[in-house]
Length: 219
Image (cartoon, rainbow, N blue to C red; front, top):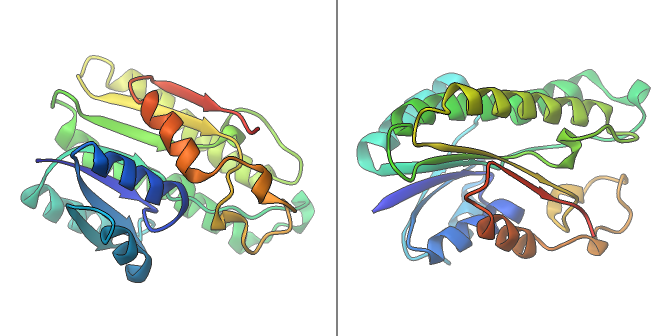
């Protein structure tokens, strides 16, 4: 059975993408830092494995991915994990900038580097990077977050060119805000309920999964 790895799979969009791909017959490998939330998602799937892992740690990523590749036929990777800190540029803290780049950029690159060379020759293989519309244009009070997403955009477009002769599909998804726990401790968005639900966004993504670029603007 073909397996798909999803990072940040315990909540929000990662959870909904896992449920969506699970219904399509894929075996899911759910990656995240909370065993509890990953286990809750696994209960809703017929066939899934959980992997508690810090994608910011390259040694941990490499060791765990090599183990997974030996056990499962991995054909896809969805880099969904991401964090954001918002506010005026002069108020953003050093540790917040570092955390965003470690998770959003380095985590995505480490996971891709561990998986892509091993699946790039397989028909039907894919790497999907969930980026956000913050990777398309600048936004007020999101300077460091936007910078991290522009980095992921540049990385994605570059590996698309690098692997264009291979059967692997490398895609970028740029979506607007969603009503998820992402905004739980933030005052940046006062009413996230006005946004699309993660389930709605997951449905749109899945319906356009054959495209190299998917843009989903906020309502």
